[in-house]
Image (cartoon, rainbow, N blue to C red; front, side, top):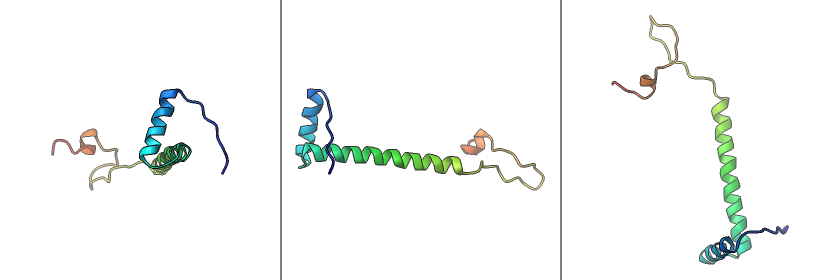
Length: 81
């Protein structure tokens, strides 16, 4: 496994040592787990954003005598019903 050197203030390192000890890990393994979790959440957010922007805009299905139109704010939030 490759090595990585990090620089942090003493308080941050102290807190990392304490949290690693609480979880029964070495500081190195703890920092690796924190990075994996953070980067995984970033990937999840990126996928969700791409999914959202890949969808076509939503237009309300018209009643028989209406033209196709965007929903009003009240319709979106089901207000006044």
